[in-house]
Length: 323
Image (tube, rainbow, N blue to C red; front, side, top):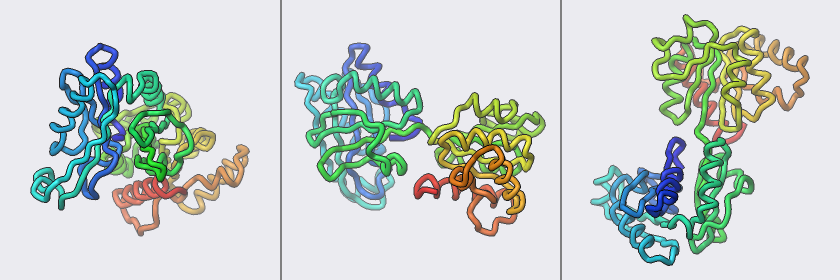
C-alpha cells in the first residue's frame, strides 16, 4: 500500500453508492516494477478508476476483468497474470520485462463489505492492519498482529501457505522540535522519502512559512504540540533545539509513546546530561537506549545539510532494520 492513497476508501464509497466496486491488488511482480506488491487499483461498476497496479501497461486489461467480475454476479475473486515483454517494459520505464500477478476482488463478496469498512476505519485511526486473503483470493480477516516483519518493512506478499497479506500502514510522520538550519534541509528530504513532516517551535521567527514552505508548523510549546499531534509507532521524533526547556517535554512524551525513532542533537556530554535528566524522571535503561544521541549516523557530517542526511539515513535504518 502507498502511504497517502485513498483507494480502499474510494472503493467503499462506490460500493455504498450502489455503483459496485472491485479492488485489484498486485500480488507479485518483476523486480524493477514501478508499482510494488500491495499496490492497488479501485474500479467502479461504471469503469471509473482510482490508483494504479502497473504504471499504465496493464490497467486497461485489469479494468476489463474487474468489470466482468462485477457483471458475472458470482462475486468470485480473479487472479490475473500478465507477461510483459521487454518492449512493453521499456515503455513504462522498466529496465527489462517480466510478469505481474494481480488479484481482483469484488467488494461485497470476495472482499466483504464489513471487512472493508473495518479497514477504512483502521486507516482513519492510524492503526496498522493486514488484509489476509486465502489461497483462492477471498478476504478472510483483518489482522493487527502476527505479521510484525511485514508491518516493519511495509512489505505485502504471499505467505508459504498461499495466503496473500496486504499491509496497510499509517503514513510515516516526522516531528521536528526546533526550526533550525538542519530542519530546513531535513524536512524536504524526509517529505520526498515518504514522511509527513511537522515542525514545532514556539519561536515564531524560526518556525515561519518562509523558512518551511508547505509544512505544518506549530508554535505551541513542544509538550502541548506533541499531545495535539499524537505520537505512535509510525512517528519519528527529532529534537534539534539544544535547549532542555524545549526538547525535554517532547522527549518525555516520546519515551512514553511508541515512536519508532527518537533522535536528539548534541554532543556526547550533552547527551549524557540528557540521559541523567530523563533517568531522574523515572525512565529506565531500556527506555533511555531508545534515544539516538548524538543524533544521526556517524558519516563525518560537517554542515547542517550533511547532518540532516545522517539523521534521515538513521531514521530509515531504524525503520527498516530495527534499533
